Length: 428
Image 1 (cartoon, one colour):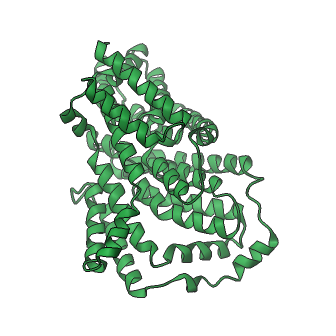
Image 2 (cartoon, one colour):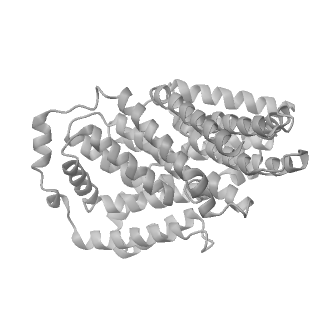
């Protein structure tokens, strides 16, 4: 590797160590590390800008604006109380219900969109029944990434793989990944309930208190509610068909946000300013810094070299290659953004066909499962993780890097082991 590559690795490792230590806010570390990369000449300003995924940024900002406006109608409080009453105030039932709903939505919407809609509702109801929101937030993060793995449109790595391999259709993803993702979700929820069983307790009095709530009294501003739900439904519809319409998910989110602001806030400057102040800017700029840090590793060839070493070490054996892609993809995706890793792996897997591997299909599913499920390993493994933790922290539920990793990383490894068994039995 070049001199620049080693400097990039050192800066990245130091930045990552500071993020883990949490002695300095992760957004400051990411931004400072990115600037050091540019000042040291590892990556130019123009290159840095090309590595910032403005589709992700647009998606985050657009959905944050939508959710902020919709929150003013009280609909999330309404749904929280309605759900709690259906679950009769039982925290365990609620955690299962919210997690399954999150996974289902993430299969057909972007993960970030799903957690932006679900997490505020979760925080509201856990406050009402006086239980820790931490198990709920962690469960929903993991459910969103597992659900997103099951379909072509559920997670960016799948969209990239589907675009590169035309034979892998929407139904191909669902048929090959749907069942295993459901199994992984159920196993993960079972283990989370075992881990947090002592925290998922509430009193009979609080259960009765919840059952006595009138959920309809939380609804307010009916005209705004109707407009918001109309725009949200339209936005979700565009998300489902954005591939066919040749629209990026970030464009869809910003279009929905702009349309809703046009319908509701076009003359009210004060409320408009309030909406923009409630965007999670710390999460946005954390992503900006992280994209540049990882971009430096891409530009210096570090990620490509790691991928090539992994593939060449297998000597073309289909089983070893598949398992290597699965496990290396999972570990790397837990610590760096999975998009540049997948972008690097796609051409390399295509090249495996020239080394004697005639059936590349298990390699594609290994890449999808490793990259998507690996995102559950750490707070920074996936966009949904960062946004969920940021929203929870802002509302008083602080989950540190190590607190999350201590629970989520072993569960992620369990999901990868299940995936390995599935891939071996079905394809190898």
